[in-house]
Length: 302
DNA sequence: TAGACGTGGAG
DNA sequence: TCTCCAAGTCT
Image 1: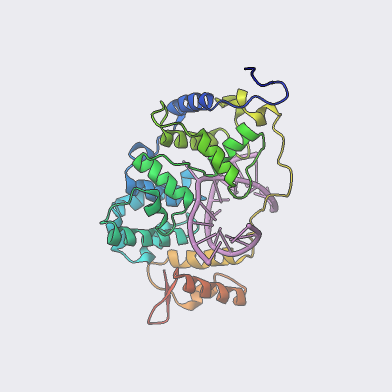
Image 2: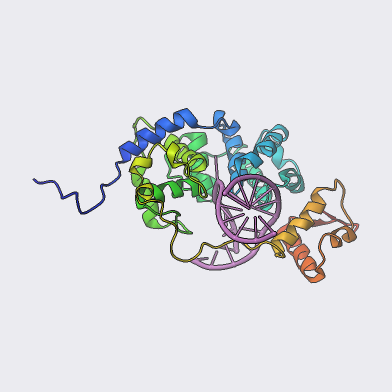
């Protein structure tokens, strides 16, 4: 029995080393966050929806106000969806507020008012996709799931593949690899803590723009670091157009409604965007989406 | 599966 | 300034 030659290929990264180093790093550097320090299901769920494509610092104040006002799914479900959209404030992607409200209604009607604890039940809720279902099941119910968010994916692709950024969508190979990396049952590091730790490392150290490799617990085994931080090659990563888009127009319209406690006349919306055709199209789409409501008196409101 | 979907801060 | 990016989901 001879061991395979090691010279031709790069040594495989030992998962045990990753678990030990990243777990220890997390013990020392994890941020104190309300939904992390007291990981009850509803707060965890609310935070996860708010954190989709949105930085922690912007979520914090809105989260606190939200939990104060709606401490349970039933409390949120009892109010009109427009109130949820209003309370969402400037977090962006207001349909998330709408979906969170719809999820609260479903939880109240179908789960006795308690956030369900399995991945299957969770992903069936509005606004809850693969990542969020795995995150809630992991963080609020200590279940074992592969949690693949943008942070985890970036950490893995750098450490293990030596590339700067992950692909646009999650591949099967990527998911299989992440599954292999998950600590075994009964391991010192729980799977849910591993998920939180890798996310945190990506959020604080292995960031997209300016990674802090000097502070990274696994820099010495990271292939991207060893390779001298090669930049992303291949097709340019898609940027998000903004100025003049329907998204910007919809945002302006919604802002007007958000800032008014009462329904507003059409004239108020007309002042929010110059291009009349685009404005009408966006207002129609907001009405279709249920984000905006036309009152009996012909005014507009959330 | 690519594109739509908000917002604001960092580099 | 302007581009890029932030704990994605849905169609």
